[in-house]
Image (tube, rainbow, N blue to C red; front, side, top):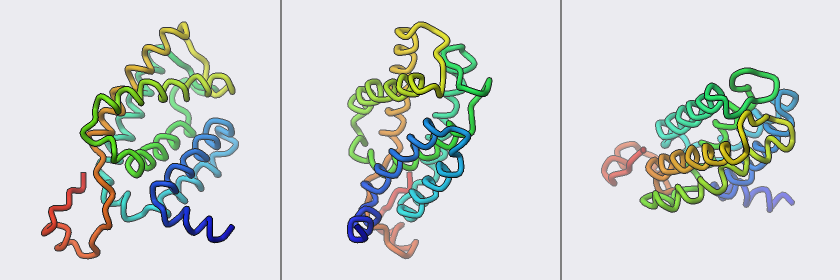
Length: 187
């Protein structure tokens, strides 16, 4: 068990993916009651990938901002209402922090493949919202077909942005001068 955990933590991609799955479950299932667990899991994700996420911090902030902006548009546009609030719940905001961290670690293979990113986002993004409504985290305010169209477009655009912002995961040099000489690009 200890060796398995060590391998998970040393594999940054796998760690980010597995931890984000638990972040999603904690945030959506537990919502306000499990906020502490959601925060702890996000901290664990960042602890497992500190250098990689630090060097992608600007992309991280752009993804979080775009995601929260898109969420706010769906709420103010009357597409969805999250349980217990008129706006964006804290658990959803945390979920975007977790998603941005995971996306920057996992989706580097989508760089330059906007069409594939849009397709995958358009398929898998909406599924999470419909799953969330089934477990009581939110309620659709429009017909399911309308919501599906909105979320397909929203997630296709968000994943195109992610595909534009991700960079290949490389072993980062320890000294800043080496990074600039090797042409390392932070965003």
